[in-house]
Image (cartoon, rainbow, N blue to C red; front, top):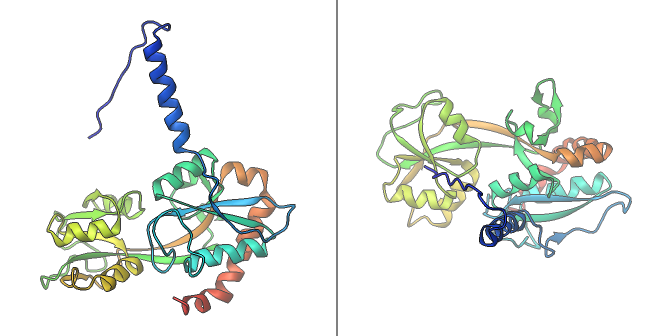
Length: 283
């Protein structure tokens, strides 16, 4: 629950209050700032703008590797290598920036970054431009597909049968800001957003949740890397959902550079079909 703080400004000459307002505005502006240390790729047509691409600062194997703000020089992740190749074929260059997923969304909405990878949701279409076909995103222009699975302690029970939750009252944790949260709430599931996938696995092992919903590839990789700690955690075989993911753009960028945006989407289909399986062999 979030407490609401309401301030009544009675005297505009109150210097202390004005200073507080200025400080608050400064902190907000700082939260949307872009550091000058972003990793940049310099290849591309100099007549085209550099695309400021934001992705999360926690590992999502094999899409994104490494944690923190640094972009690994080698093996940054399959999706990152695809983005680099796609933008190069479109005649542009890309600047790679790493923040939390929620901050990437906020920066995109504010026009402070140009592009992210996202699954399609009507609410996200309010702040980002997707490759559309009718009233849905064009599946042929996706960069990847990923599934969310339900993980729980190995009690011999199955919590998800592929269509329904076997016990709708169970407590389910999910990573903050991920699309699976809305999907589970539409199922009337008892779901709570709580940090990262790694943190959720720890909470699950301590019995703080009955289950967690998380991306399959990433969660499986974390469990393999920490097999002693998470050896008693299993996943149900059927995915909760499978989503297509797209390179999407801020509305400002799409309005200013429509031909580049169209070229990126056209090359996404070409590069994904030609190189994705080859890139996966590296990881």
